[in-house]
Length: 96
Image (tube, rainbow, N blue to C red; front, side, top):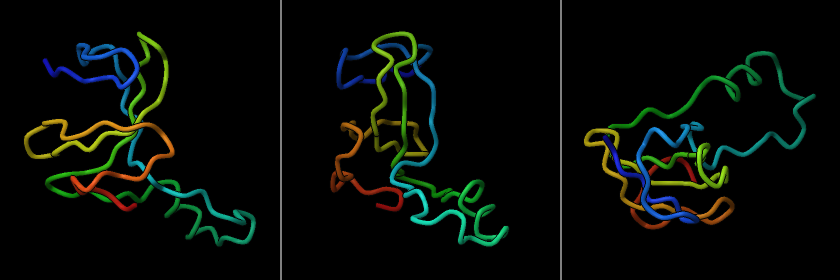
């Protein structure tokens, strides 16, 4: 089992959390101006690196709040957690 450090509740078992996908993916400024291909890329195409990656997580069984985390996809180690809306720490990962 993984131990995930919720920034609001502290360390908890991984079964209390839900993965929310890649962090820092901006919503298109004018989604109606996108082509079908551009809209599909926004919805379905995400980075898939080996190593540090910025992700969104929700503490669904605890405080129910969303937060961001940098997780190493090769080792599953959480390198950092930080609030939604904050920039990614220098631990790297994802598209900021």
